[in-house]
Image (tube, rainbow, N blue to C red; front, side):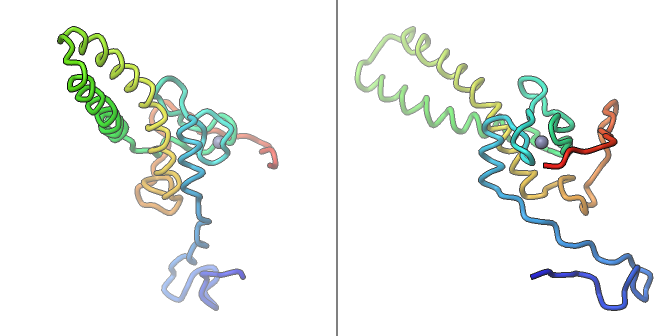
Amino acid sequence: MTVTHTLAGSEPGDARGRAPLEPPASPRAVPEALLRGARGLCPACGAGRLFSSYLKVSPYCPDCDEELYHHRADDAPPYATILLVGHIVVPLMVLVEEMYRPEVWVHLVLWLPLTLALCLSLLPPLKGMLVNLQWALRMHGFDPQSAEREGPPDGVVPVVRAVRPIR
Ligand SMILES: [Zn+2]
């Protein structure tokens, strides 16, 4: 079934001169986008790398040219990382303390490296999941019809390809 959002007799605009309504955007699968984000992959194609460095999101997907600069992850990835790592490390620390009563230096040797390793390894996948979730939910500029939609950031040249491969 095809649903059209154009009022009869309203082409190209209605009697008040408004532009015809855009067709509804196709839904984007949230679970698939989250899985791709956890692997650091583009939410749209699942092939291009989401990050250009450790935590820097590429402005465009290098594979499908999807605009990725619309994300507003801000401090949500560190927040999610702290929340998750805290729920892993603190119970372990309490358990070891209750079972073995080790010296303080043993705690330091155990938990500081573990906390650091967990934070550094979980931050990229959690950030990828949050960026891809924003894409899947068409938040911010990821919705082509959004008023929040902006052009590329300064210094970023939009990708223009003469011929786009058919997938
Ligand atoms: Zn892509």
